[in-house]
Image (cartoon, rainbow, N blue to C red; front, side, top):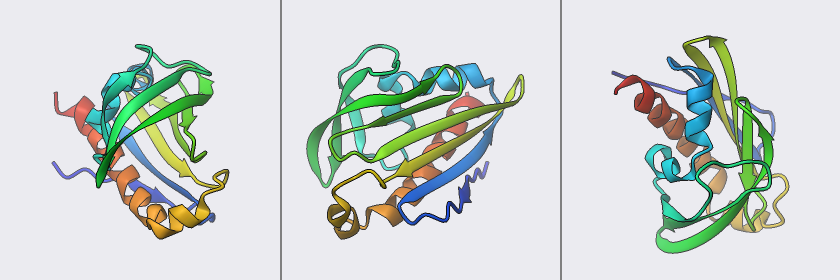
Length: 155
C-alpha cells in the first residue's frame, strides 16, 4: 500500500508539520507516542536508536534519554513540555527545538495525527541552518507519520 502524509504549510520557515489519517483509536495511538521505547519504530529520520533511560509512559515534565545517530552516535535527554492526555504530547532537549504530536479523533476508529517540529525557541539557528535541518525534518516528519500509520494498519 502507498501511504502518504500531507505536508502542512505553517507559514513559518522554522516550523515544519505534516498530518495523516490513521485507522485506529486515538487513545491507542497516543499510548504508543507516550512510550519512548516505541519511538525508534516510528522515527522516519532513523536517528532514534534506543532508550537509555525513560519511564514506561511519558507525562508532563518526564525526562527520557535516547541513543541517537545522525552520522555519529550520540545521546540526548528530552523533557516533556506539553501534555494533554490522548490529545497532545511535546518534548524538547538542550537544543530547545520542539517535537509535537497532536491527536484528534474523527470517529472511534479513525484519527488525525499532526506531527510538528518547531525550531523557533532554539538559540542554535546557525546549527539548524548549517545542518539543513529544516528541509530534512520536513521529510522525516512525513516519513514518521507513514511509519506510524503502517504500524497500526499493517498488523
